[in-house]
Length: 215
Image 1 (tube, rainbow, N blue to C red):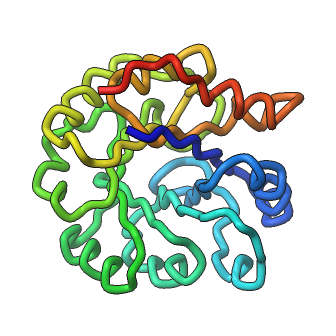
Image 2 (cartoon, rainbow, N blue to C red):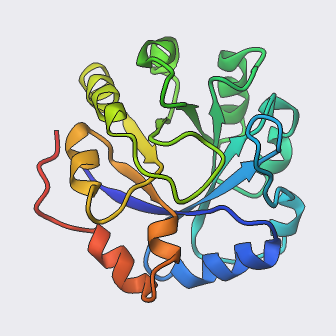
């Protein structure tokens, strides 16, 4: 199982988005844009996909849409990112239809679930999804501590979806990443731990540890 570190951007302005992409693009392949509408979660972030149309970077982008009814704005995001992640809890009218639409546009789709949401809700969609994102904090704010009780849910998902991509987002550091990977995650989102570091390159290097037992 290949492990991938995905830095996350949770900021208020496009200038900050650009700065953070440039800060990590030499060290990783993917980056996640945290998009919040102030409704689905209390926080509100930069959320204008048009800003990215003329922005050049060698890094691939995924948009984590922490918004209500993401199908209403998904088209604009799919023009500028390679992968969109939507929340099961976000009042999507038809999840299967949204998955089909995104695949028609030759982009990837992930389904996110909050810490309290049981893993059973994603089962009907697994054969069509590109990934499942398990939140290990309540969505909306960076800098939270990882909820270790979610690790059991990740283990269960890996058992029922042995070849699927499992992404984890929230509170991951170099101190707990082993537990997260051993639970079954292979895409590891990290924000605060990277961007609060004095040495971003070294922070990412410290997360890419080798002595981990993967499922």
